[in-house]
Image (cartoon, rainbow, N blue to C red; front, side):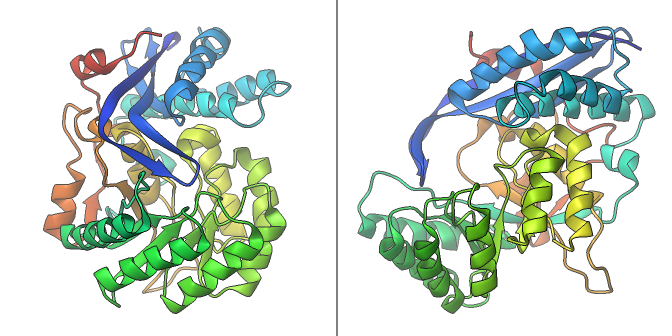
Length: 389
């Protein structure tokens, strides 16, 4: 079997309302899918992390840089291909957009391998430790509103996510430490004392500000405090983990095993959050998972993208062993973005129907059992939403 072509599909549409987090507002939803074709008619699908113009730039990397490197290769030699591409890009992109682009290609190769074997991805990895995964609902984005309007909206959204059946919820912060604490208090009041909630800062605080917010989160019994400081500030992460009771999570902006080695050896995370569509794909994710578990650090995958990203993560979460293990072991969660996302809800020939499953099962989502990712995109849908670049 040989690779005959590699194509990128950048999809985009205008959101019904502008959304934001601590770094920016955005009015369009973007997804970057990668399609790898073979001479035996088997096609694999992957996804590259990166919004807007980043996705367009990554399309150039996939098609103009990586594609010539892999044409004619056996797609089942995915580890050989991974290291070939990484080594050829080593002088130009050990992290960032080059790794995001490699991620989409690698995920597609795993999809091909599963289709060739007639097995879901989790079987190729070693089997399912679980056949369904609890999901948490992510919402409460920032908007161009005053604090009072944010508080009212966050109250309503948090209660709605709880009532949808999700196992927990996650909110954004970034208005400023004082304002953010008020937002967090409002969410806790809205959902009650027994429902788990998490707070995502998207690295907007200094260490001292993060301590101030983190102490309030301790009182509110937040489950984790995500990316409180800049990803480069490893010392800040370590100090926060040592000084706060709330779990410190992060890592979505880190790439490859060498970057993750620095984070894990620094002991600054209670919960690791690798992004498979950015770190180097499934091949590199499995190496990073092994590193995290070698440091006894639980993993909750970062998930942001289309149904391809969601399906990939469901496969990986199925194959993830619990650490340290036991009858009532700590279990991973699936991150689910509850804001408007056609590329998650309408992309597949057979939709995942996450919301329906969560409502019916009390928070659980079944792991796809079809070959590869267990998810096949609708080509007419892709054609309708693909942007001309």
